[in-house]
Each structure stands twice: as structure tokens, then as C-alpha cells.
Length: 226
Image 1: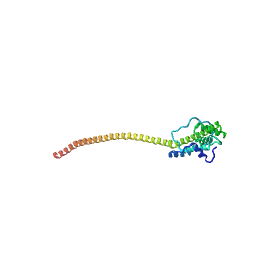
Image 2: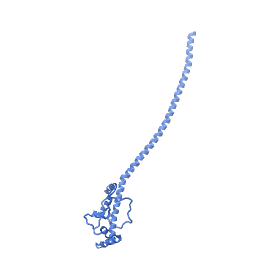
Image 3: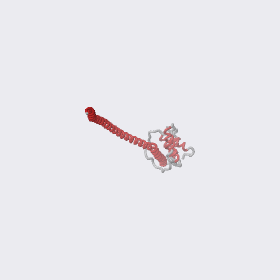
Image 4: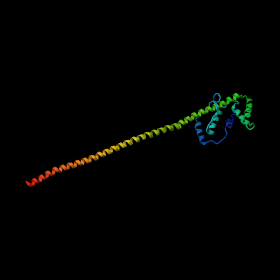
């Protein structure tokens, strides 16, 4: 087993090529990574299959999170990590990859490591990473629910409110048009009533004058002739 002192830095040196990280991705890593539970030991199993692929770039925060999980689940004794360390130590001495893997394994055998144990221990770390992947996806889904779904529900409520108000506006517009039509009819009725009343008044005055004048003339003639 790699010595406890500086263990994480040693593991990190085996996997990581230092590159500047994306500040925004680092910020997201802190937010989501803080929600991932402390890794637990899992039974050894073979890798699920195939190389993991991604369209993004590695981020230091996420890489550190995964490597710390590997550190926390480091198997006692000489295992895959020590074997990988041996590979790294002879990289400049043995340039041929195949020979390098064979030579490192010959050294590992002196420490009691077999090919089966080497693959099992490497598979163990695959399981550790798979567990972290699940925890991360669960945390990410939780973040989506909080930050996206909550806003999506708010968006739907606003859209519904706009739709309701639009329908209300359309309803009021129809009522206004109906009221305008009714107003026009009432105005016509008023104008008709005014004309009718005026004609009636003129007719009454004419009739009144007709009778009044006859009686008045008769009174004058009576006064004059009798």
C-alpha cells in the first residue's frame, strides 16, 4: 500500500496531468460535489464494460473528488495503485509499453500480487468511481429539481396567468363591443324619441292654435256684434 504520508498527492500524480481548470466548472463542482456522500467500501467486481467517454474537459475539483474517494477506499497491501506507481517509476527506463507492463508485474509478483488480484483491485476502484458517479448523478438530479424544475413550474404558472388574462381581455373586448353596439341602439332610440316628441308637440300646438284661434275670434266677434 502507498504510504499514508502524502498518499493523496501520490495517487493524484498517478492519474492527473495538471491543467488550469474552468472557474465556472469549479464553482459547480463545489456546489454539487459538496452534496455527494462520503464514499463507502464496496465488494470487488469486474468493470461493467468499455471505456468511459465524455464531451467535456476534466475539471480539477471533480478529479480531486474522485481521487479522494479512491484514497478513502485504498486496499491494504500491494494492489493496482502500487502497480501503477511502479509503471510510472519505470516509464523513462522502459519506453516500450508492453515491456513496461510486464516488468512492473514481475516486480509486483515479488510482493505477492497475482494477475487476478491486480485486475480485481483495479476493478474495485472502477466500482468506487461507479459509486461516485451514481452519487453525483443523484446530486445533479436534485440540483435540476431545485434550480430548473422549480423555475419551470414558475414559468408554467406565469404562462397560465398570461393566458388567463389574455382570455379575460378577449372577453372584456367582446363585452365592450357589445356595449358599444347597445349604446348605438340606445342613441338611435333617443334620437327617434326626440323627433317623435317634437313632431307630437308641433301637431299638438297646431291643433291647439286651430281651436284656440277659432274660439278667440268668436269671442271678439261676439263683443263687436252683440
